[in-house]
Length: 117
Length: 112
Image (cartoon, rainbow over all chains, first blue to last red; front, side, top):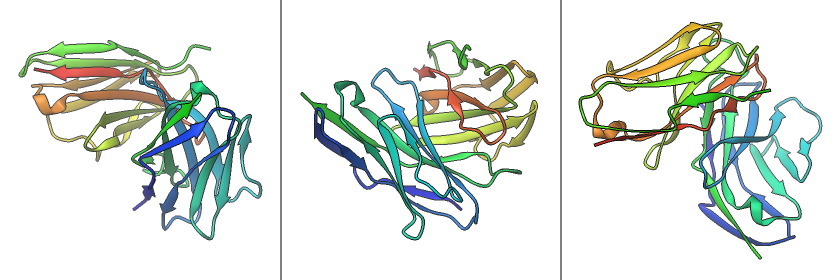
């Protein structure tokens, strides 16, 4: 079974500062994928970034980067230069290697990020 | 390209009524997923399809829930009869192979 743990129910950051949202995972699959999604107050789920378990480098997408530490089973999201529009709930999710029932995403409980002006 | 389209955006109905949620996946995507989001249970997968065939329905809560995908561009999630505990936001998502899943805007369902 796969499990995602997000230990920070809420985080606050000043505009223009960087923030790290924590995510740890547990799986017995040798190959897996890790994802981060953003859910603003309007409710939609927005895909941000993906990291494969065998990727040699940490994933980056604009101001988002994923600090992947495989041995520690952590996949923290780093948002640089925070903006007011980054205020939202952030979910970490995991998927197995694919095939069979392994395409489903298992989500953490989320971290509510508030960016202060 | 158009994203995943869900309808209706909001649904309010009385207990015992039949509820049908609809989803149009992104064109070319071969996987379609139905998720439910509640405060108590968070985001959980209900069922998913590959090439219109249900692959894993282990998350469907009970027989009152059913899902179909008659073709590559349409899926429904039906609840009959509905109960107040079914109140939640229901998301449809689609993906191409093992690429990231893209979500629709969700249907906010309230059962009175």
